[in-house]
Image (cartoon, rainbow, N blue to C red; front, top):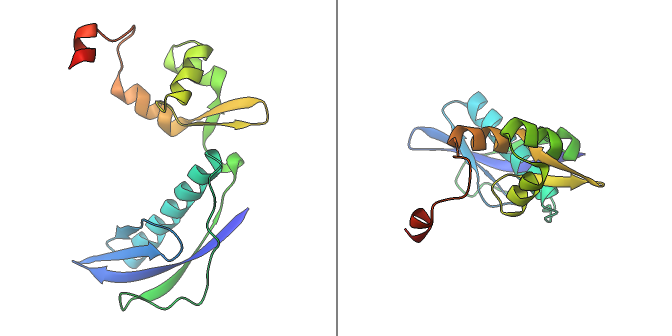
Length: 148
Protein backbone atom coordinates (compact mmCIF):
# COMPACT_ATOMS: atom_id res chain seq x y z
CA UNK A 1 0.00 0.00 0.00
CA UNK A 2 1.17 3.55 -0.68
CA UNK A 3 1.60 5.99 2.19
CA UNK A 4 2.21 9.72 1.73
CA UNK A 5 2.87 12.15 4.57
CA UNK A 6 3.94 15.74 4.90
CA UNK A 7 7.14 16.51 6.79
CA UNK A 8 8.57 19.86 7.76
CA UNK A 9 12.25 20.26 6.92
CA UNK A 10 14.27 23.01 8.59
CA UNK A 11 17.86 23.77 9.54
CA UNK A 12 19.01 23.35 13.14
CA UNK A 13 22.60 23.34 14.36
CA UNK A 14 23.97 22.74 10.86
CA UNK A 15 21.67 19.79 10.12
CA UNK A 16 18.43 19.52 8.18
CA UNK A 17 15.77 18.19 10.54
CA UNK A 18 12.69 16.44 9.10
CA UNK A 19 9.62 16.04 11.29
CA UNK A 20 6.33 14.45 10.24
CA UNK A 21 3.15 16.37 11.00
CA UNK A 22 1.05 13.31 11.84
CA UNK A 23 3.40 11.19 13.97
CA UNK A 24 5.94 11.55 16.75
CA UNK A 25 9.61 11.30 15.91
CA UNK A 26 11.67 12.40 12.97
CA UNK A 27 15.19 12.35 11.59
CA UNK A 28 17.90 14.56 10.15
CA UNK A 29 20.56 14.73 7.47
CA UNK A 30 23.51 16.83 6.39
CA UNK A 31 22.12 17.66 2.93
CA UNK A 32 18.65 17.97 1.47
CA UNK A 33 19.11 14.67 -0.37
CA UNK A 34 20.34 12.88 2.75
CA UNK A 35 17.53 14.33 4.89
CA UNK A 36 14.91 13.23 2.31
CA UNK A 37 16.33 9.69 2.18
CA UNK A 38 16.49 9.53 5.98
CA UNK A 39 12.85 10.69 6.21
CA UNK A 40 11.85 8.03 3.69
CA UNK A 41 13.61 5.30 5.69
CA UNK A 42 12.13 6.63 8.94
CA UNK A 43 8.59 6.60 7.52
CA UNK A 44 8.98 3.10 6.02
CA UNK A 45 10.28 1.67 9.32
CA UNK A 46 7.54 3.39 11.33
CA UNK A 47 4.75 2.14 9.06
CA UNK A 48 6.19 -1.39 8.89
CA UNK A 49 6.43 -1.46 12.71
CA UNK A 50 2.77 -0.44 12.95
CA UNK A 51 1.80 -3.13 10.44
CA UNK A 52 3.80 -5.85 12.25
CA UNK A 53 2.23 -5.07 15.62
CA UNK A 54 -1.24 -4.21 14.30
CA UNK A 55 -1.01 -0.62 15.55
CA UNK A 56 -3.10 2.23 14.22
CA UNK A 57 -1.64 4.04 11.22
CA UNK A 58 -2.26 7.78 11.56
CA UNK A 59 -4.36 9.47 8.91
CA UNK A 60 -2.21 11.74 6.77
CA UNK A 61 -3.08 15.43 6.73
CA UNK A 62 -2.17 17.80 3.93
CA UNK A 63 -1.86 21.57 3.66
CA UNK A 64 0.06 21.85 6.94
CA UNK A 65 1.89 25.10 7.69
CA UNK A 66 5.55 25.02 8.78
CA UNK A 67 5.96 25.28 12.56
CA UNK A 68 9.75 25.91 12.54
CA UNK A 69 9.94 28.36 9.59
CA UNK A 70 10.94 25.45 7.35
CA UNK A 71 9.54 24.00 4.15
CA UNK A 72 7.04 21.24 3.49
CA UNK A 73 8.43 17.99 2.10
CA UNK A 74 6.15 15.20 0.81
CA UNK A 75 7.46 11.71 1.54
CA UNK A 76 5.89 8.67 -0.15
CA UNK A 77 6.61 5.01 0.49
CA UNK A 78 5.28 1.57 -0.38
CA UNK A 79 4.85 -0.61 2.71
CA UNK A 80 3.13 -3.85 3.64
CA UNK A 81 4.02 -7.02 5.51
CA UNK A 82 5.46 -8.22 2.19
CA UNK A 83 7.98 -5.34 2.05
CA UNK A 84 9.50 -6.23 5.43
CA UNK A 85 12.78 -8.10 5.13
CA UNK A 86 11.91 -11.25 7.07
CA UNK A 87 12.28 -15.03 7.03
CA UNK A 88 10.01 -17.80 8.21
CA UNK A 89 10.47 -18.82 11.85
CA UNK A 90 11.98 -22.19 10.91
CA UNK A 91 14.63 -20.41 8.83
CA UNK A 92 15.31 -17.98 11.69
CA UNK A 93 15.83 -20.99 13.98
CA UNK A 94 18.43 -22.40 11.58
CA UNK A 95 20.18 -19.03 11.30
CA UNK A 96 20.31 -18.60 15.08
CA UNK A 97 21.11 -22.22 15.90
CA UNK A 98 18.06 -22.63 18.16
CA UNK A 99 14.83 -24.58 18.04
CA UNK A 100 11.66 -23.31 16.36
CA UNK A 101 10.02 -23.21 19.78
CA UNK A 102 12.81 -20.99 21.08
CA UNK A 103 12.27 -18.58 18.17
CA UNK A 104 8.60 -18.30 19.15
CA UNK A 105 9.62 -17.62 22.76
CA UNK A 106 12.12 -14.98 21.65
CA UNK A 107 9.50 -13.23 19.50
CA UNK A 108 7.01 -13.29 22.41
CA UNK A 109 9.66 -11.92 24.79
CA UNK A 110 10.61 -9.12 22.38
CA UNK A 111 14.12 -10.48 21.80
CA UNK A 112 13.31 -10.81 18.10
CA UNK A 113 10.90 -8.75 15.98
CA UNK A 114 8.34 -10.94 14.31
CA UNK A 115 4.83 -11.02 12.97
CA UNK A 116 2.15 -13.38 11.73
CA UNK A 117 1.03 -13.57 8.15
CA UNK A 118 -1.83 -16.01 8.02
CA UNK A 119 -0.77 -19.05 10.05
CA UNK A 120 2.94 -18.47 9.53
CA UNK A 121 5.33 -16.58 11.81
CA UNK A 122 8.07 -14.44 10.27
CA UNK A 123 11.11 -12.88 11.94
CA UNK A 124 12.77 -9.72 10.64
CA UNK A 125 16.25 -10.17 9.25
CA UNK A 126 17.36 -7.00 11.09
CA UNK A 127 16.45 -8.51 14.47
CA UNK A 128 18.23 -11.77 13.55
CA UNK A 129 21.36 -9.81 12.59
CA UNK A 130 21.18 -7.82 15.83
CA UNK A 131 20.82 -11.01 17.87
CA UNK A 132 23.78 -12.62 16.10
CA UNK A 133 25.87 -9.48 16.69
CA UNK A 134 25.16 -9.74 20.44
CA UNK A 135 26.78 -13.19 20.40
CA UNK A 136 24.57 -14.59 23.16
CA UNK A 137 25.98 -17.59 24.99
CA UNK A 138 24.20 -20.92 24.79
CA UNK A 139 22.18 -22.15 27.75
CA UNK A 140 20.35 -20.41 30.54
CA UNK A 141 21.76 -17.32 32.23
CA UNK A 142 23.64 -17.90 35.46
CA UNK A 143 21.61 -17.31 38.63
CA UNK A 144 24.42 -15.01 39.80
CA UNK A 145 23.96 -12.83 36.71
CA UNK A 146 20.19 -12.86 37.13
CA UNK A 147 20.54 -11.35 40.62
CA UNK A 148 22.67 -8.43 39.46
